[in-house]
Amino acid sequence: MNRGRTLRSRLFRVATAVATAGALALSLTAPVASAAPPATDWSKAVIDSTIARNPDPQTIGGWGYTRGLFLYGVYKVYQRLKDPKYLAYIKKWADYHVDANGHVNHSFNNLDAMQPGNVLIFLHKETGDPRYKAAADQIRTRITTYPRTPDGGMWHATSKTNELWADGVFMAQPFLMRYGQAYGDEQYATEEVLRNLETYFNRLKADNGLMWHAYDGDRDAPWDPKPKSDTGTTSFFWARAFGWSAITYIEILDMLPKNHPKRQQLIGYVQHLAKGLARYQDRQTGRWFQVVDRGDDPDNWTETSASSMYTTMLDAAVQRGYISRSYQRVADRGYRGVLAKVRNGADGLTNIYDISEGTNVGDLNYYYARKRNTNDLHGLGAFLLMQEQLHP
Image (cartoon, rainbow, N blue to C red; front, side, top):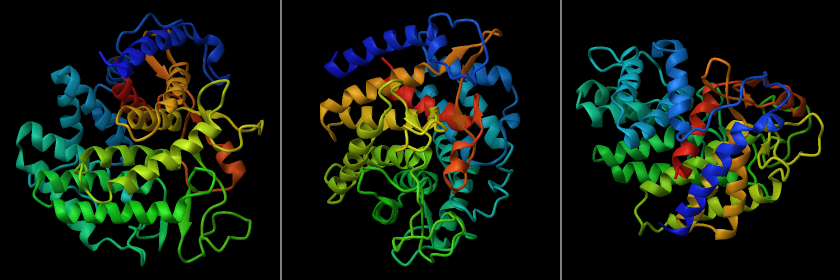
């Protein structure tokens, strides 16, 4: 076993103990519950608990990115455990939306709606059912005609003219890359994905190693009461916004050919974020704050989904050699911090606390006041990606 795996195995045992005994680490918003028994597989615990609460996947919600994220996490666990009920759960959810002709009743006029397309590619691979390929084709066709900024970035939504939001890259670019590699469209997909990542990064990067929540090319979006700078960016660093970007970079690098001339440029985006995340990690909890650079503000709070995303990127980047091994300590603290937000309830089911609800672009008080949910799919999906990255 290599050093990274040995460290993660040791960390897993330590983190499980932290989660088991972690009443002091829970936020004040978490209800009192019995201590969790030692868990050997938190991914399985989260999925089994979610299925127990929602035996019919229709109840987790309709076609949308949070369901796509969670089910992507379920699929990654299925790939490891090969539990047929996990694949059946994914398939049953998809079959509520893909009709007999392979059509999804959706206009795909926003990037969020494209993210569940990943589920279609996975299901086509696993089942061979042509309906799923036809439905994925529907999204791919829409990408061709979807509006873009003059420098090539796909708008966050057709109703948000020339707006780029940091979360948007995860919603469309991994799907497009997977589609291209699965169905002989790799040249277009690779060029389009890298163009979008470059445009988004250049518009949203900040000097402190973070990324702004959004950019408006028209300078007319009513995001913030303060005057808009000449860069067109928002005024705050909302955690989950560029958490989506962080995991996208790892996803695309895993699919990008090793000899691609722009590979190092993409690694540079990871290195940029790694510096900022190391700088702003909360030393007490190991997590990151809802507004990342304002940890001293008493109204701020550490957010679990973004902390999972950052931990995933940092650990993967260390293991793949994109960043210095010194960042492993940052990833390890992040992992322990997230595990401290995981607890079994009195019903024996696993809960994950302090997950920000769905969030628009807003001012500082808006971000602070977002509801801190338990078992929100944003957090469950992000947790599964993290756990599968760091699993011993």
